[in-house]
Amino acid sequence: MIVMVSSAAPERTALVALSESRGWPSIGCDSVRALRRRLKSLRPSAIVTRQRLADGFSDDVIHAVASAEVQPAPKIAVLLDAGATAAHEARQLALGADSTHRDPVRADVLLAHLAKYRLHARPRGAKKRPPAPPEPGHFAGATMHWADRRLTHVGRSVTLTPREVQLVELLVESRGAVLTNEALYDEVLDLRFDGDTRTLRVFLTRFAAKVATIGLSLREWLRSVPKTGYRYRAPNAL
Image (cartoon, rainbow, N blue to C red; front, side, top):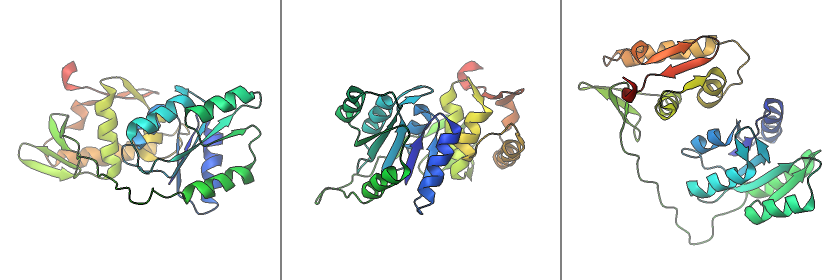
């Protein structure tokens, strides 16, 4: 898996398409925050990141990868503006980047690096320690068992899909802040938001019907913010 991190949607889409043209699975992230969430479940072989992002810099991407303790550690390629100096390039390499690419980025050179990065192996004899299963959490008055994707309430339980778990995790972490339609499309549906919310509304309707089978009313916990997104009414806000 290759992760493309860029806050510019056209560039992110182009990078994913470039990778997939070689048959390499790839996903896009629009921010450092989105990447941190992805690293909880993904083990990418390579990460391509723009140096400047909407909520930080490639420095933060490198730190996020190190903090996630992904094994084997993914290779990181940093895309720099045309005006970047040699000092900028040297700094990225010193921070932990494996390569830098200055605008205009040459697709053939980037692909050559990615081909090499995909083949990098874990050091011989190294053992990958499986992560400890996360502790159960709370969502909408129910208990979320992250390890097996089970949501339980008053003695009943339902198994969520990976996308539904992603939604629950995003809502819990929002702590009552508004989640924009753009964020929900990118982080939950893996789609680019074009202004039409029908796909999201269908997804939420189906999710609401599923949790209703264990006695939860999603409407009591999730409020629509017109033309913006949704707000989760966290328990501590009750």
